[in-house]
View: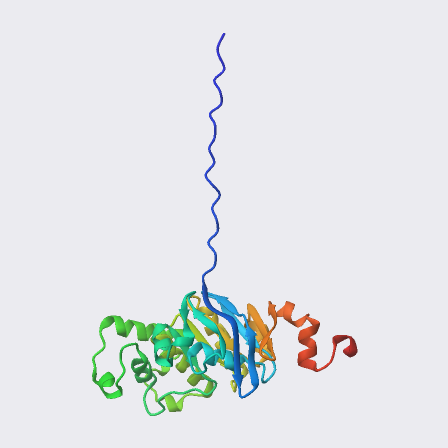
Length: 270
């Protein structure tokens, strides 16, 4: 009589633990006091690498102050701000923070109007600091490829040899973002990038931001239609702290957010 062979035991591999998203930016109990006025109050904020985050809120909510802390323009009165988990930004000067890989764009575009689009990008390239020496230097093939790729990204390849001063307001905004990209930042801080744009330029700006999937982007914005169309995650600030975080739908349906923006309770509006 044949003897039954015991079934071979199956050893399952251990479950794979999903990788935790890497935080590229965080603040711990940050307060900023301007002569008794607390622009930021015990703020705990974080965002992950590769994230596109919109920062909204009424005037005076602390949005721009938060960006100023991150890029070193303002020192926290208390608390700490960290880049990539362990780099304490509060101890560093602005130029050193920029060298780490944090790029800041202000609301008004700042480009060299008397130079071509191509020259502006060349000047912004990392390591090319002197204006005249940069313009006289000959680009190697890798640098040329980087500039051409950037021109395509910001949709200005057909205007590469035109003066930056001849660009529309929206095109100047794109050029300045391109100049930031030439410095190879990991984190982009953008202050109202859609301000003053036409509807078409605004749409193209949103499309541009969504192509930058290898960057972490924090945007301060007041154009709610722009935020509604292009935001993935929204942080609402009010009186120096976080009021709500989530998708735009979650934020819009929060009664506390409606009260802050409308100045009255949702129940009073209905």
